[in-house]
Length: 272
Image (cartoon, rainbow, N blue to C red):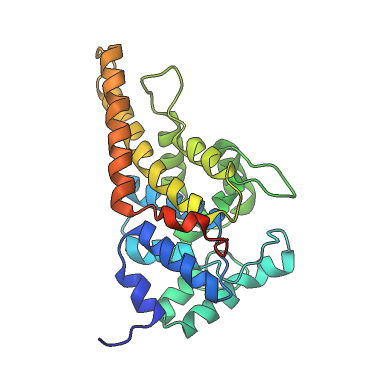
């Protein structure tokens, strides 16, 4: 069997949860930043791609989402590191076998390195990275999705062009405001925000498991909301609601089994 570079290996794996497991093991032996903030943002990226059908290679950009911050530090508000981590990460990824295009889009996650012609994947990653505002930090509280959108458009990207900003705004507002069987709006992103903020930042095993569970839950809520949207006058009794909840539990169980929750790792003290 021909030896593969790390880049070839992780790009050949199409399952997002399996990619996360690969990086989890890689992190144990190398200086690679990876925590639940990365898992949160990557799941946001997956949802955005799934709902908007952008002309982007999903495998490429989701892999980039997992790795562009590989040279971050645990201190998120160290401004000097904030300005340099993307470039340092791109240089490191080059040594792992990633091509110039991949490294370039990872470096374009922010605007600290001047670039004349931004890649479309760079614009995509920029939006996803900014939605890290939804996560708790030592120096500030987590913002709501609506607050984060306002800051993104009127402060962080004020005067800058991002080709996917309008698509991203529409995506966030749609998945947050679908009608559901209950009395509340869908709040799909808020549910993911609360789920990941409830976990310790470096409890990565539970973070991956939470992503697997949330993915099925979010899909169910979205489908339900779209059906109600198409048939606002339709009648749904309690039995239908109970059946929907029962199906959700079955789907979650199947999804978890399919993606291997690898619970045997939970007792491994070496995994952060």
